[in-house]
Image (cartoon, rainbow, N blue to C red; front, side):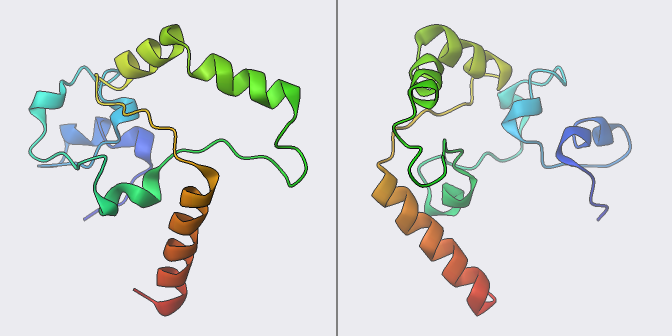
Length: 115
């Protein structure tokens, strides 16, 4: 096994038998999601550490610029572009902050325990 950075995993397919490719690089690599030997499930507990979130420093949660960015991100145009860039594999959710904090606490607890 040879670790490479995420953006290099698709390129590595030229010299390895298999590669783990993040969905952000599927379309750029000319691959189709159907080419995958395995795909994880976005709603699986195993996928929880990989949820992308918008965060702000304490006291900045109501910042108008941040709120506008979030609003724009959830427009059909941006979601469609993100989905296209991921080869149609992007999954959009709107997890409440307290749920995301629980997920983070669980991940940090697992790391501290060495599991």
